[in-house]
Length: 133
Image (cartoon, rainbow, N blue to C red; front, side, top):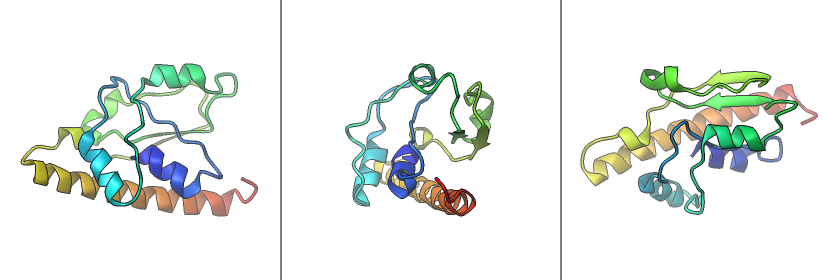
């Protein structure tokens, strides 16, 4: 969700890539929650952090690495050598939500909205600070 929002909100300034330590299947509730607001992530494939690192600008490093692991799993958040700025934004993992399907979807919507708000705020800050980007 974070990758889709960053690419939608300020994709003319940044190129977001999403990855995990243990990539699995795309969360269908996240796909549904994003589709509800007009963003289709159904075509996305999960990928490992290692694969993203190998395909990225390894010589120069990434300008920003933003991890969205929740606090309880923060020790398992990846690090990227050479990243100019590493930021950690704690959000619950939608895949870890429990309850009925509707309760999990409602929780996923809440997380979706929190992620979007944080990315909007960050993009506003970054575009104001870095007018040449």
